[in-house]
Length: 319
Image (cartoon, rainbow, N blue to C red; front, side, top):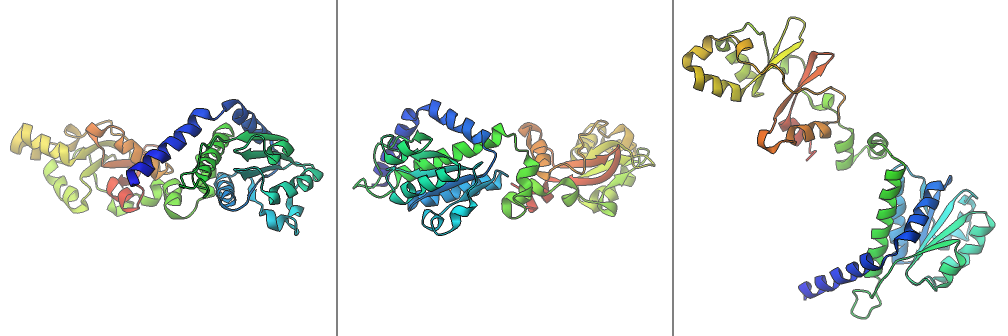
């Protein structure tokens, strides 16, 4: 049964993607872009839940949006509506009386309406200033009654508009971060390198003239898998890793222990600034799967200020 329902669900969504007319959607997006007020979304029943979710998505992106309960609207909430606003009612049938009753009041306040319906001949579509028709062949419900396919299509369409607005308005990641300070999303877009990096005495350091034998204790005790080779002013000169230790011993044998770090280190290690998002640091570490980076020196004006380990990023729950 589940396989059959999945097949039917896929077919229903395919119908939406195949038959959605793009030109009205692009026109609606243009109207949304030009809106200088608030996007006011509304709906009755299951469509209302979808409208509320889309309003929340828009708001999280820094786009002024609000869900207007059509039942509460006529009991005072219409006072929120201004002439610069845009009203977006969601309704499959386009015949929800609660929404139809709202249109004259919305118009009297000077606001425009874009109806999101699945019946282009509906009264809501005719009363609105503009409408977009979402094609729905039938509901997944065996009686073609319970809102299932229609609400899935509304949600897909609402998210499409939200992301299109986000892209056209070029909302930066920093703005998105300010609206998501908590939870998993908040951590991913607010934690920076300096929040997770090792600092001070925890950073494994050595001088370029140090013999490998003398630096082994620092390499082992700090348990970072590397040494940052620095000058007297803590300017980064190079990086020596566990992998470099293995390769040095394989090529030089015991003589490697008497060799100075300046002759063994990598002289142009990849670095990151302290104010870089930790998520971006993780991307840089993973960008070449064949050469995975597990540590990155954190450098400011050429001076070592920290060390970021992939382990610390993973511990913070960013992946």
